[in-house]
Amino acid sequence: MLKSKVRLLRSGELAAADNVNAFIDKIRKGDKSLHCFLDLNEGAVRDAEAVDAKLREGRAGRLAGLAFAVKSNINVRGLRATCASRTLEDYYASFDAYVISRIKSEDGIIIGMANMDEFACGVSGESSAFGPTANPAAPGFIPGGSSSGSAAAVAAGFCDVALGSDTGGSIRNPASHCGVVGIKPSYGRVSRFGLIDLSMSLDQIGPLCSDVFGAALALEVISGQSRYDGVSVDAAVPSYSGLQPSVSKLRVGLSPDFERLCTDGRIYRLVADFARMFSSSTGSGLADVSLGYVDLAVQAYYPLVYVEFFSGTRRFDGTKYGRRIEESCGEEVLRRILGGREISKAEYHGAYYRKALAAKGIIADDFRRAFREVDVIFAPTTPVLPHRLGARIADPKVLYAYDAFTIPANLSGVCAGVVNIGRIDGVPVGLQVFAPAFREDLLVAVLAECEALYGKR
Image 1: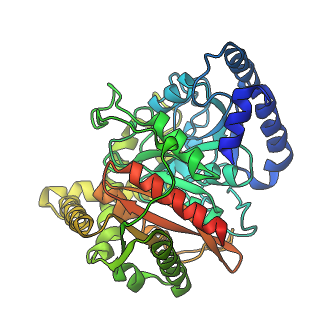
Image 2: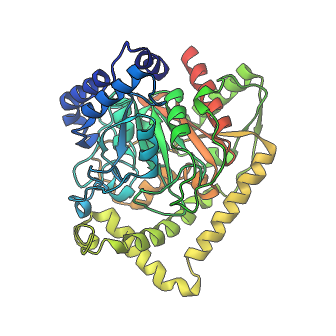
């Protein structure tokens, strides 16, 4: 448990430098087969030694000595932010993203840059230009994407905490497949400044960890407003890691609409059974809640992503940032660029993007109505189990369906998290919990209770 490690670091029983050195040694021995990392931070041990000095002096921050893996679309000064693409293969970040500056200010140590789907365009972890990431929790299966390296690094024990980005499920999807905890904050809770965006109106940065405490601690550090990010919200940030895990007498929602769309019925049954167990253990009410528009999520999401991704990639024209993206990217990235270009051309008719925005509003209203009836909603993370690593899936719509249950949180702006509740056919399955926007305190408390309940089984 990360709480125990924090205590050891604080007491001096574990040196930050020893913690980092142990991870680096483990990565060098074990990552050749997993490919979680694209780059290691050569200055990580030096940074840890500086933190040890601060620990001895009693002036170290909340994250003192903890090692962070960072998804390669988040800028870390002096390290490559490639987005796992040949386009940015030689791009070294000249500044720290807001979340990185917050981690460093609390004496967390960046251990390296994690592999990912190229430009976050993917759900499997297989589209990296530098090779796919494997799943250490389910050998032979995909780890999920696009924060594949971040989730796999946590599952493999290569770091204490990892950062990912989540546009339609890219933290929660791999968290589920790799059996770890992942949190997508409310839109605006965590600044996106320094994130190389996929879709500016949907992206959020969030933590992954082996336990809820670690994810909560990271979340409370990276949350907050940045003066460089106009959509980040100036709101008080609770001490998520200090919350009592016990919750009781909540109104818990289950939606038949997720059951109807769940391709593998075993996944929904596992979620529903766990919801009943949670309800019985905490004295909470359990009720069906209507989310009748979730079947529009994928159709609304991709026109928005295509258009915003096309717009955002116009800077990668080969004159300032690396290579021209259309000449150096992979198949899925090119598909989204060309699709976004065509939608943008047709947009003066209001044919796609504006209709997708209208559908986004409908889904957001749907969640607002639901949260008047219940406090939280339990749902599957994905409608199917992950496929075999290397399996050729020719139809992109099949891959896009992996995010059908996670996309609604991005479209509605609410917060959501994933915690492991079991395995099916040897593959981890995560419970997804939705909570109202800016109720990360409630979300973390429920996730912690679920974690404790699963541990007692």
